[in-house]
Amino acid sequence: MFNLAVFVSGRGSNLESILNYFSESSITVKVVISNKPDCYAVKLAAENNIECIFVGKAETPKFIDFERLIEKLKILKIDLIVLAGYLKKIPDEFIDQFPNKIINIHPALLPSFGGKGMYGANVHKAVFNSSAKVSGATVHFVNSSYDEGKIIAQRVIDISKVRSPEEIAEKVLKIEHELLPFVIKKFEEGKVQLLGSRVYLKN
Ligand code: GRF
Image: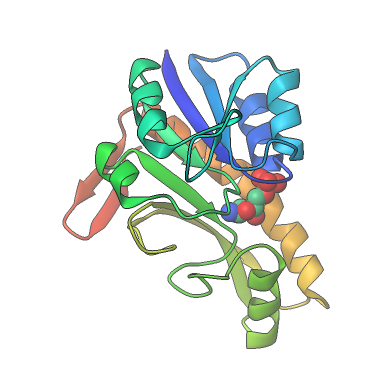
C-alpha cells in the first residue's frame, strides 16, 4: 500500500480525481485533512469513508494542532502528503518532519503567478491580464515559502484564444486532474529523483 494524506479547503475536484484514478490500485487516500470542516471536499471524503482530520492553530474539540497531526500521520504511515487546494500555510515544523514528502498543485506555471494571495481566481486573472499565451499547472515540493519549492512536473496549455480568466480556469483544472495523479504514481513507483536544484521523473 502507498498511503496518501490529502489536505483540502474547498471544492475537492483534485481529491475526486485522485480517488477516481486510484480506485483500483494500491495507492490509497488514508486520511483527508482540512481547516474547513464544512467544505465540499470534506463531504466527498466522508462519502468515501475516508477519515477526516481538522487542523487549526490550537486544539479545540473539533480541531487538532499540527504537533498532534505529525504524530497521527506517522502512526498512519503516510508515504506522501498532497496539498490539493489547501489554502492555509503549512507550518515549518510540520514540513521539517516530512522531507521531500509534501507536494502541492498550483494552477499556473511557476515560478510565475505564485506566492501569497495567488490562489483560485486571482491566479487566472493575473495570467489573463499578463497577456501570456500559455498557462498550465505545476506540481512542486512544499517548502517554507508559498509556491517556491522545487518543481516536480508541469503541463502547459495554449490560452492564446481565451476570452476570460474563467476560461483559463476551466482549461487548467482539466489538466490538473491528470497531472496530479500522474505525479503521485511516479512517487509510488519510486521514479522521482532529486538531483541538485532539479527534480527528474524517470520513465
Ligand atoms: C486547484 O486549482 C489547485 O491547483 C489549487 O487549488 C485548486 C483546488 O481545487 N491549489 P479543488 O478543490 O481540487 O477543486
